[in-house]
Image 1 (cartoon, rainbow, N blue to C red):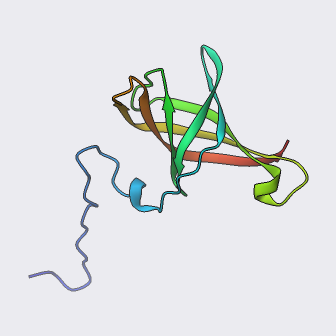
Image 2 (image 1 turned 180 degrees about the vertical axis):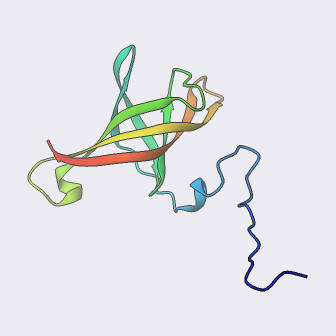
Length: 119
């Protein structure tokens, strides 16, 4: 029996991968060019899908879970209804990394910060 005025606290359940709540947003299968920045320079990759919380990339390199990543997504002018492309500069963390049959890797990133800029 609980005491008056006291509330019990329940922790949110975690999935086996440890990223509960991150996959709750709808995903959109949109392929957009991304400039991924790393210690080795910059490489261009393409998104597989995007949600309000994050993005899934397909790439050749392995990026360890927990790694911080900086990347820029380019939104074409005709898609955003403008005269020029819009860039979204993002900072995030790798929360998922898996090997695909084709030898490429799927890398899921949660977006922690972002900023819109006209190209």
